[in-house]
Length: 486
Ligand code: NAD
Image (cartoon, rainbow, N blue to C red; front, side, top):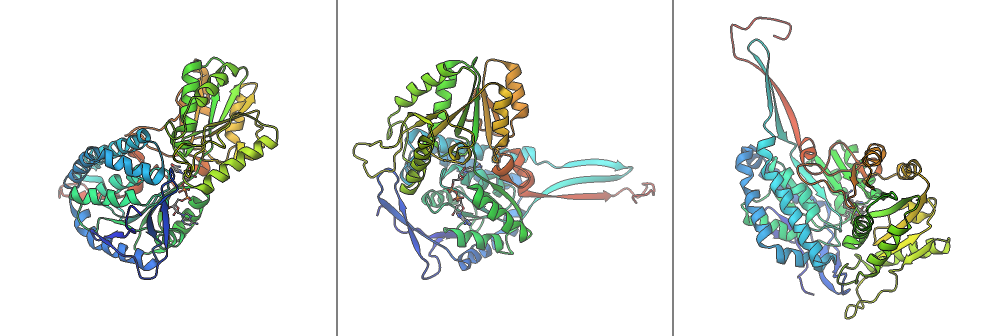
């Protein structure tokens, strides 16, 4: 085992979880080897972490924001300095290829850069509302907050919440995915090196029981969650029923509407990159292509591009043997129901990594909207193609999905592009962009069953979630007149 069994990070140090807790194996998805073990922390471990955060909160939240953010200037530099090592760690525990892992760290650095700019944004408001009477609004942290993250971005998704929430004065408990828990410890170490005081960030490893303890703990004021819709609903219901604010981002089924006038090369390469990047394990991945009218020339090119991809070099494995089986079952079922598999990623072998969980890019044509593969989140390098006569029929299919993370249209027509942007039922829409992730300062967040709660997880949209506004009314001028608001 390459890494010793993991410990929680509480009060600035790595500590063992309570005695007799079970540990799970952590796998390298490219080789199937066990690389570490992760503890399933108990409610008592969550309680210890909350107490450490509560102890740190008065000092951290009491500092002016301009004194808090220099930690993140230094953290950003450390992320950039350690990019090789951090990316290698992502590749080891998640499986994604080196260029994707490096992109994840660059995105973490961009998220941190935004947090560094918060003092320029969160300046409050003030107005003389009546002679000598001022109203002002200042934003205060909400307290001790929790962040629960999924397996697909071991470094970036924790950094969706850590820099903003902490720069805004909160103290945090991070509960990373038990499938990719190692990066979280490195994030904590780098923040310590950057000067983050002990107790401001805790890392508590675990699974369902640990998350339930976070949702139930009276010392936690806010819960941010990123993961599947099934668990997002559980966490949102549980946290809000305990009277906490909650923002829970869920799964996705992203539709790309492809018009016959789309630029053939741009559409084909972007669509294949979107469905196969990170082995399709992205909540922004293309999942359904809706081809409007005659788009066979684009599909032919997509098939060429996908067939040229080499698993193990151009795309990594999926996260587990179970995930590979689940994804393969979706493909088998669609095929048995009459869909046509144009590119088949099921039985790929990567020489030297025969025990890895690899699947090649898979493109399936003539899928019907009522098939399970067209409706459910597959979360693998699989793209299904539906055919429609016009753009309204394509939008009807997109609108019928219970999800609403992302949607894109490929066209050369500004009118059609604008029409789709207006009518797609998704929080993030793109034109000729396969992965329409908003860059900072714009916020990340979907609609419908892809997000529960108000606000977004990153960018400006996260400020409201991580803070509470205090409205202050003051009068210092004794000469001010007496009126209805005196
Ligand atoms: P998951 O929902 O299985 O796990 C997410 C977190 O919830 C983990 O930390 C896990 O330990 C915890 N958890 C699992 N089961 C639980 C339960 N019953 N009760 C309480 N907590 C529980 O998600 P995953 O498989 O790690 O990640 C993939 C999913 O995340 C996909 O659905 C993907 O679309 C989604 N995702 C969404 C976004 C977004 O921005 N909307 C971003 C990344 C990933």
